[in-house]
Structures are given as structure tokens and as C-alpha cells.
Image (tube, rainbow, N blue to C red; front, side, top):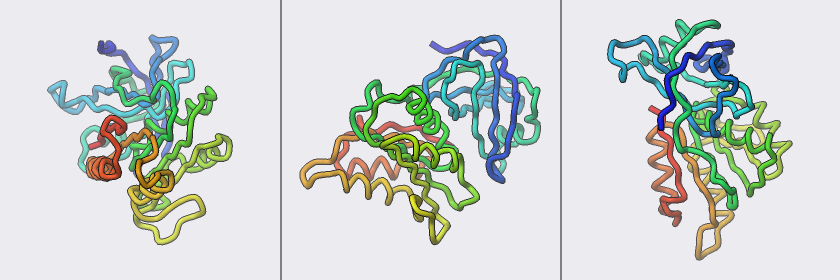
Length: 247
């Protein structure tokens, strides 16, 4: 069942990178905006006469905290009508219709196997929500590998926060991976995300069977498609692989 359209109000905006902003949105008519980590909201932006050409969906980047406020992290797309509007007209006090939460890209009820969260760019949003929620509620889990792909150090999203969480949460590993850097700090990688999850998966496998794991893939279609194919070649059933495409 779809949630009704409500009015959201921007209450805070921060630059995260030269091309990425964080937007905090409040839903004044609700005391609490309930959602599951991994879900998204749809904004109705004044960019077209047809409704379905105005709608833009974004994963929620914050964890549910009992308030009526949530966070989005959005990258400006060259020529993108939606992000051009948000970056140009978005300001504290701006009100927009929104609907949500929605989506089934959510955590398993019991995290009884290793969890690989593989993403590129702002595809990190649902995973930041998930790991923050796990940490805040002390949810039991096996190893969690958050593998975040971007081009350069300047494209980092939530780097300090997630590296700090890595120190505080046993069994959580934040593994930024840079495709256009030649060297990376300890605990980070160069190249593409595929080499990183492949390394950890193979390290945990026996010769006969792949180690039980859940895979969540979020980001650009090319990355998600390639990761899905590689994981199936490693012996994982498609039921263990969950997808959320961006763009």
C-alpha cells in the first residue's frame, strides 16, 4: 500500500563533496517518520507538467531515529532536471510534496551470514542507514563489508563517520575503493569494487562451496549488472543477491 503524498520541508543543507549535497527534510504533519533502513522516498519536483516526469526517488541516508526528520544525499547530474532544481532552488524552508517510505531493499530479519554491501557514489545512502541502525540498536550480525566505490579521495561520502564506526562496531569493515587513485590509505583500496568483494568472498570460501552470504548491490547499472554476474559465477544463487539501481 502506497503512503499518501505529504509536504516535506528542507531544514538543513550541507555540501558533502563539490558535486554532492546532503539535504535534511522534515515532515511537519507527522510526529515520527517511520521507515526501514534501505527504503526510499519520492519527491514531486516542479520540473515538468506531467506528474510522472516530475517524480524523483532517493534512498534515505539516515537511520530511523524516532523523529520526523530524514536525510538524503544527492549528486548533481549533468543535465539532470531533478538535481539541477534541487541544487539551484533547494534552500532551507523550501517545501516539496513527497511520498514514502517505499521499497523492499531492506535488511534480512536475522543477519545470520556475512553481509556484503557493495555500492558506487550515492548508492552508499541505504547502506549508511543500515549500518547506523545496526550499530545504534546493537543488532547481532556476522561480518559486514561495506565496499564503497568512487573515483577520487575528493568523492568520499561519510568517510570519517564510517571509519569511526569501523572502530566501534566489531565485525564491520568500511572499504572505500578509488578507481582513479594510484595509492590508498590503510583500509582502503584502489581499482574497482569487484576486486574487493571478490577477494573477501574467496578468502571465506572452501574449495567446494561459497561461504553463505547476503549481497546488496546499489549504484550505477553497469556496476550492479557486473557484480551480479560475477557473484553468480562464484556460485551464489540469485536469491542471495539484492539489487537497487541508480540512473
